[in-house]
Image (cartoon, rainbow, N blue to C red; front, top):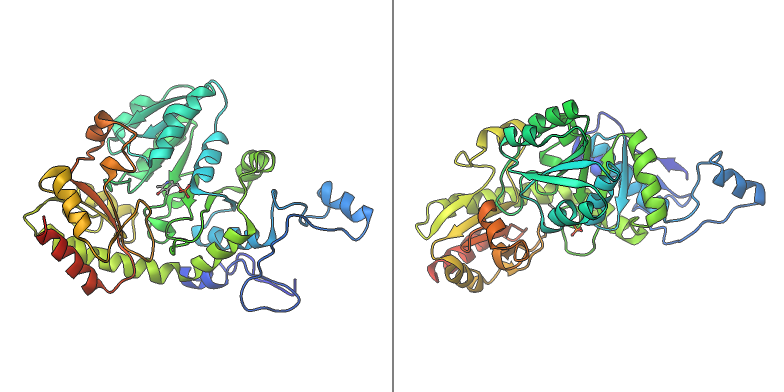
Length: 399
Ligand SMILES: *Cc1c(COP(=O)(O)O)cnc(C)c1O
């Protein structure tokens, strides 16, 4: 390595960090980061191998443990988040599962907000109990419910904010305080806010997780995730799980996601601006019963959003008057916005949560979460805002 900007300078602003942070150049001095597509590493002699394995030489051993391209991704996002340590994973769900498993053992208890990404809810409600970890799901916006759910054996709390798909905002600092008093670690899934608009660690959370599949890639190419926290917890609790169970990020995915980080600020800024324009347009339409957008004053938790977020959202939710039939008619009339359950993409995507992402949670849970049959979730992309507004307006006329 001839040049190693590693975590970069503390004085760099986010956009600079995301272009240069973590870069490790080979002796060839390449401009773009190198893709180290290798499983293992060779040693000059037997003594060198011994030193790698006993930790005297911190070099690489095997890509299930660490890989230079993955390290570059981890150092870059770690610098942006202001975390001591980061570990890349194969997907967002690998990151969530690892983070929660690293907090608990059989006999412990987890408190989580009810409004979770479907698979996150499965981890808390179904998977952890199979291994002797009980969980309580609460209405995340009601701070009293978090307090009331605490037990002597509570070791982790888990939330997303804004939530999927209803974009509720949970007061992270208030939940962090309850977690601290309970001796539990607070894990925040920060996908919807992105690292640019919300910094859970500075609000008192202990762990931040991302599905890098979403805005960090942002162009629909590969899956990835990351767990960020303090150095001690990552090396003592997360690393053994990664080494021995194998959910590490692949070098190829790390390379794609590293390049994704470079353009993250301009993509998210543009998508958020367009989402705000579409939200303002939809808010005034009589076929739209309800519009939920975290950047507007009529959002139910607008005050909390202002306190903990630095921007609105690339996502919005609407409830079309007329239930499932009207929501389907609107969706099918769209020409530019594509139907997909993904989000954070360059392409605008719409999904009907009740029949897709939240079909499996059941009618009762959907009612509790406010996911009605007329609700649609829109992820705003990078198309021209005027084309998107025309598309939405035309689809609304078809309802
Ligand atoms: C997509 C998503 C996940 C899961 O990420 P994958 O990369 O698909 O495994 C977790 N949490 C939230 C909020 C998500 O949007």
